[in-house]
Image (spheres, rainbow, N blue to C red):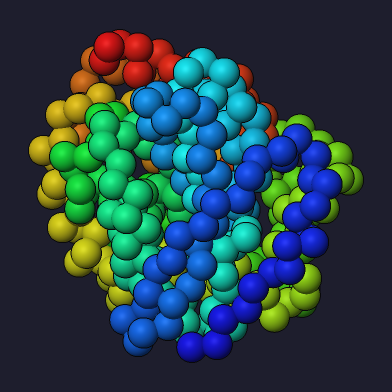
Length: 300
């Protein structure tokens, strides 16, 4: 497996991004070692909050949330998925599979040895993050899901269908422009550039290109059975499980109902609808911090 690494200079001077880069190693089944980047801010003894991004963003999506959580005394941990952000990027589209991503993130999660974790996940951060919850339920104290799902081959929204087609046909994938399109507010030019930073050219974007095709929206997709097995665990998960979808995302519209109906821990939780587009972290960072802080304090 050939692996690309974005030069560090690409990440200098990004707005609202003062965070020290940290790295862990993950090893592919074929023996290739890759560097996985993450942010880890706030007191070491604070309640750990795992912030998982999706496609085609990176931990920069959580920049305001990281600061807000740390200011409230919590430990904010935001990894970059392999293929995104400052993490290494396999060079071939075929290197990217759903199960490989679950395995890579599981390796990193085990090495971090986190306990009593509160997960916030959006987009592919949910598809992968909820698989972590299913694999390590004893390590999680609570979950907040936002604009995500755990599909098992039962179809797709019209919004996702449109995104899938666009992602596979657009000649050049404008990463920052896509984040801007998927946010309710208009990002600044500097913010758009920060989302473009991990990708010096299209050779670095193979993961971003491949991810939409991996979502198991048909019975023929890979990972359908693995997700069914994960649902069986979630259907026994009785710790706090809260939905915080946005009011302006056609891709995941209505997806909160499934979690509320099937996860026992979702009963009697203060589910909410936040303002924003698909990338609601750009539109409602303050409310997201408040939701996470309140969940942790209810446990305390």
